[in-house]
Image (cartoon, rainbow, N blue to C red; front, top):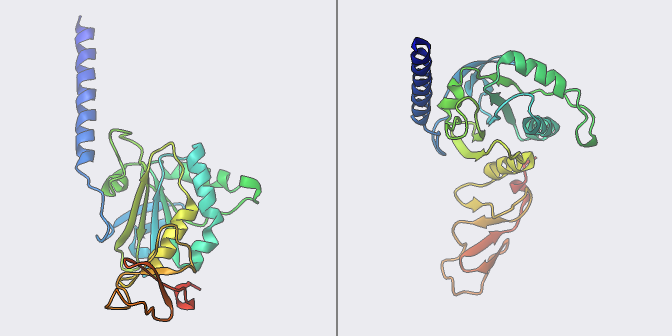
Length: 247
């Protein structure tokens, strides 16, 4: 009887701790677009890192995945490694994080660098893999979603500008891999768009841009200034120029 009581007490205590942890995780909000990127210090496969400060005045991407040595996460890192030169060309620093410990990161990185993915030669992984075994960073960035898992982060992406302001946020479930090409395209769009020029749906680097304010005050006029065209009074475009294409 005493043993049964102890087991019941242990079960209640475990349930209580799990509930308290879930409630605590819910208190960590997701940093929003336009806010400063939260700062953290961590161990990585490239040494100690203070994020985002150590990356200086450059664009940054914090890329979270659930767990090392899992199939979808492995495919995502291999795609990022494949596009590393493209991100370098745009001046973007990548940092990858999961709740797996640093020892696992080291072993996983070594294993990934021996994989021939999609018929491509094996690729070195140059970006750091961040140790978040205690889940503090994942909670700080709102990437622990208790309804899914209390120990693993969802697939989060934070795109951060040179002033360390968050410019884009996206989340995917654990069973859906992300498009690295879309992340790259998003950075290109963010680097191109401003208060005057905007990127339309499915825009790619070098294509025409939309304008926030039409170049004419009289919408009834048929005169369209050189370098512009319209599809409707509310859809004006500026023709692509060399200045809109990042070198």
